Amino acid sequence: MDATGWSKDLVVEVGGRDVVSHVGTAVLRMTGDRVGLTGRLSTAMEGSRSLPMHDRGRVLADVAAMIADGGTRITDIGTLGDQEELFASVASVPTAWRVLTEASGRLEGLAAARAAVRAHVWGQIVARHGRIPPCTVAGTTLGDWVVIRLDATIVIAHSEKETAAPTVTKTFGHHPLTAWCDTTGELLAVKVRPGNAGSNTAADQVEVLKAAIAQIPAPFRTKILVTVDGAGSTHALVDAIAKLNAENPGMEVRSAVGFDLDERARTAIGLIPETAWCAALDAEGEPREDAEVAELTGVYRTDPTGDTVKKWPADMRVVARREKPHPGAQLSLFEQCEGRRFPLTATDMTGRNLQILEASHRLQARVASRIRCAKATGLRRLPSKKFEINSVWCVVVALACDLLAWFALLALDGELARAEPKTLRSRLLHTARRIVRGQRRRRLRIPETWPWAHDLRAAFARISALPAPT
Image (cartoon, rainbow, N blue to C red; front, side, top):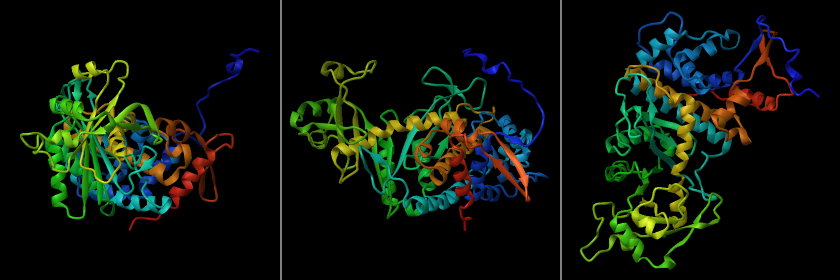
């Protein structure tokens, strides 16, 4: 049997109509329309210079759908525009550029529009699932806590762009700071910064955190846990979070941040008894054989001269984990002598098992996957030389990440509901199907042999059935 003979009778012809690609992307576009995103964006853009044919909210929503579909530059909007049979009228590339330029002066309005739409979407998520999906930690959940994870990432620039600068990785570009809702997978806020901006610039962190909290619908803004890794944690950020509690009665904001393995911490580790260590928990909540946790708070704060960390919040707890280092791990001299790594976490969370507290912060690593998916959804490169346009582009990238998260929560089940954007694109979004016309309708005919045909049809039905926002 000739294993290569399958293509000998294959002929490619260009011609005909009624066959469209990227069928699943139409559901994403519908999602934005049905939850009120397109309308809210149109309202936020009111008063701009008129365009004869294209509503600005429609253009921004289409750019977001294009990015969610895998587009990496503004010219990729042609992927939708060239399929008028499915998507109807889509703005041209020059029009998309003009709208992004005009939107640079409307960032506050766009943020307000996103928050209003999110409030409606979260209501629909509760209607479908009974609650907002909780943050799962070590085989249990954090209940009603909404977890916001802060992290920065490098975006390389291959040409001169405004505010681009050398980065800590010896590359050239930008260093945007992001805030993710770990509970739903939404990109709540993003701030474009020069490449030489620090991972632990407290002013930027506080700004992004406040913007992220403003995106959380008010009824769910009662319990918020903020996490950041050791490279990004600062005293000023912890103080700002404590101040948020004082300024907002009825809202409880807690933190879990990476902490320095300084001389005080090394001394505390040497003082606690061996019996103080207990097994760390894995993702299923089972004890790990290669890692243990212990609380250092008592010996860390107590000293003959008084409280050694009195400038930190009084309810701050310090938790240590000791584990065998993985190959290639960078160890301090103390860790090399001990033969173990000692990551530290500082948190003001109370009423939780020590192992759960440590695991809650350890899941900060999950934000790396979020950022990786965001870079596959438009964040890998910034399209313009102008800082203002790149700032709007990042807002639209956040919209695209939100659309994908909403689509999964409102329309998908099982494995597809947990799939990364790359998987969704190959199985649903990039599907090519035939349009059949009749009885004043357009019907997308999906072959029964396509493994995800029924999932795609169900997604269309669920999005179509969403109630209009009030």
